[in-house]
Length: 310
Image 1 (cartoon, rainbow, N blue to C red):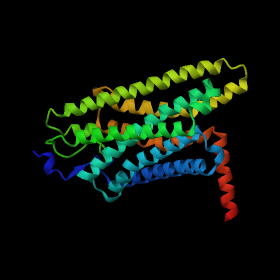
Image 2 (cartoon, one colour; image 1 turned 30 degrees about the vertical axis):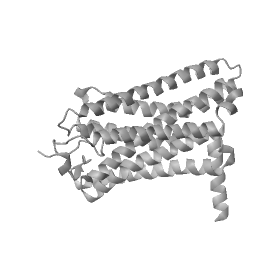
Image 3 (spheres, one colour; image 1 turned 90 degrees about the vertical axis):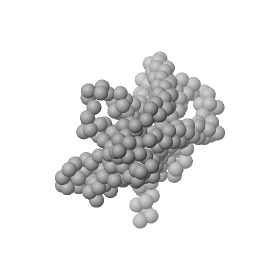
């Protein structure tokens, strides 16, 4: 038996028991991490350097890329280091920092995705009011609200979780520090406080999801009424990347946290955690760059300028 005051480190779940498989997982994570850094870095560079991309849509996309970079950098480097050095340990302070940053970035990302749905709604359903409703000041205030809400969410969850007495050891069935795994180590009814905070956050998330669904119902209704086929195609092209990113984000998180208890097992939980914490930050740049001609043009222009300077 141990309590939280005597715990100085936690033990994370390894991806494999053999050295060869550990090195293979290190290589796979390194490839995914570099792809995420490259993809999100290109989006950040293109939006920052091309004045034609200084619009609300790309401003929020820049925020999304920043959050994706932070999210994958919170979990993957430590997992790679543990696989490379054949260890499972993470310090108590490092675990608390990981929980805080992960909750902060995941919550902020969902709020930014909600704002992006509003941006698409105004652009398609109220184009004449777009400049008024989504001016520079309004965009900055909405982005600040998303980041601040995520920060407050993370402070409350981290403080609540790490104030619990822990007496069930220090080994977690996850490759990074995750609140449900820490709650399993608690031996106090005080964990109900964190469950209550989680329920409130879940309700807020449901509210954001309903807002996104309602926005797209209005968007699709407006698009189907457009007389021009070219206009409909352009509108769908504007909405498809955001809708795909939201679907990927929501489906992986819901399946990870709302699956039946009978389906829960350490290998499945590990795979689900990889899907919702590692896959979206790496795939989102590809989704947004795949059909976005303005972004492709900006990147092509940057590459041409770079090759000329060399």
